[in-house]
Amino acid sequence: MTDKAKKALHDKLVSGLQSSDAKVVTESINQLREEGQLEDIVILFDLLMKSKDDDLKDTILKFLADVKEKKADKIFIDAILNKKYKTIRKDLTGICWQSSIDFTKHVEVFTDLLVNSDFETAFEAFTVIENFTGKIDADKKAEEQNKLKDAIPNASEEIKGMIHECIHILDQF
Image 1 (spheres, one colour):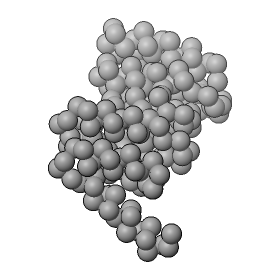
Image 2 (cartoon, rainbow, N blue to C red; image 1 turned 90 degrees about the vertical axis):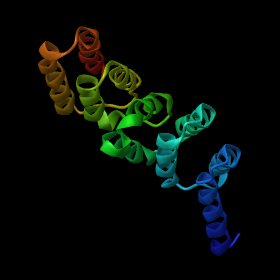
Image 3 (tube, rainbow, N blue to C red; image 1 turned 60 degrees about the vertical axis):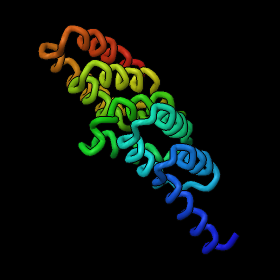
Image 4 (cartoon, rainbow, N blue to C red; image 1 turned 135 degrees about the vertical axis):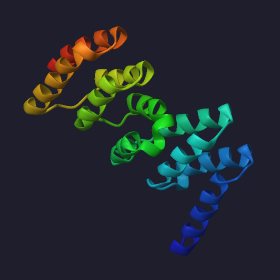
């Protein structure tokens, strides 16, 4: 397939994601598995925010959880930190622990979410930390543990337990 044909196919795919017909959008999402590009993930974030259709949201979340490209970690982290995506932050954080991508190098993002978010988002961030597979630099680990210890006095009761447990989990890395 020529570059021109690939671009035309990709443009058609992106156009399908913008359709008001949920079936067309779902078909386009499924085609992304074969023809999509890493930056198309952002289009799905926007679609997830706008969509009122629960089945479509489910399809998007499942697709995002299946992303295996290691470079996608930065795209997910940028979205989690972007105020524009605040309404789907819990969902995006949940995808991070469901995904096979290692988010260990972004430990500070998840400890900040644990300390500064509502219970559901904090729980998702805690679960991401629980599922880390990489090594954390000793200085970074100590910094994050100190941040968590400092947050305990002001944390709600339901989050305090997760913070204590997270301090112990970080010891394992």
